[in-house]
Image 1 (tube, rainbow, N blue to C red):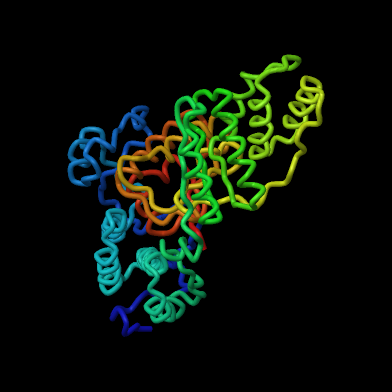
Image 2 (image 1 turned 45 degrees about the vertical axis):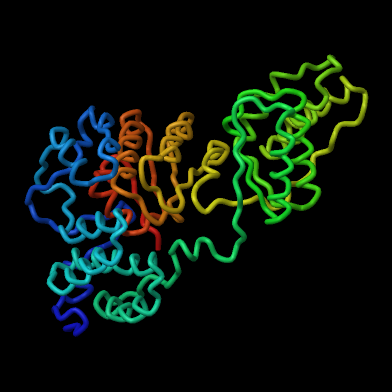
Length: 401
């Protein structure tokens, strides 16, 4: 059946040539034996590639890494147009990527390649909130492949923001002392004004009695006011405070109270009860009780990944671009005690070329250590870039529906 939309007659859907789409990454688009460049995942030196040296310029990165690439024959081929569209999208060229995909569908006859191109195009329209266009061409997809198209959902950054109030993040670092009263007054005002606040404690190195009192009163007051509050790095701070208190010594009471408060953000109720008992024995008074937390602030850009080691799944969210890839590097720490490393990419909209290269380096290193890395819920545009980078050779990539 000829489709007037793209003007080419595809191979009938359901024929023996029709592709069975699995979750193993952005699957091969062609069985051609032509050569293509790909990072040498089978070599021992893949993790030494540095994709950040050229500041994100694709041509410069490829040129500088050329001596660390090698040619393989017929390995996981994908259509050149799919590869081009993936790189354009990674660099923020949304309209250009769409034009490449639509033109490719006008000229491509291979059923496997057409399925991959269609999947990428539909995901691209969802990622750029083009609902009318999505609904217009979904019928052609259903007719060609005799299957339901993906359901419409707005995967754009605008949908991720929604109507939620802007959440301010306040970072505390170094030594926290009692000379920060003015800053804490502003912190409390920001939380009361927006109804939500995120405090990043991960870079604190020490806390004295004066600083402990400021932070304790701020956190306690915000909680009592029913402000949605997140403490990023609560585990780190609780470890610092734990080393500053000693059972049986009637001093540093504010440090004790702050420790008990912070522990309620770590899901460590058993440790909380132990510290509370020591507090009661030391100060001969009733300790604070464990109180369920109000709804915590969630992140649209992956900030909460700082404490991802407390979860069984690491999350990548939003758009990961540029040289700031701390969120990616934390995967190594998350994977330290695991043989299976599951990374949820359901809310990851885009990665640029440099970040994808950094992710390849990290995952390749974990692969050489015998760890299984599974990337779940990956949209087709990002999955195609991952295949360009060779990630499918060192990890399992599962597409989102």
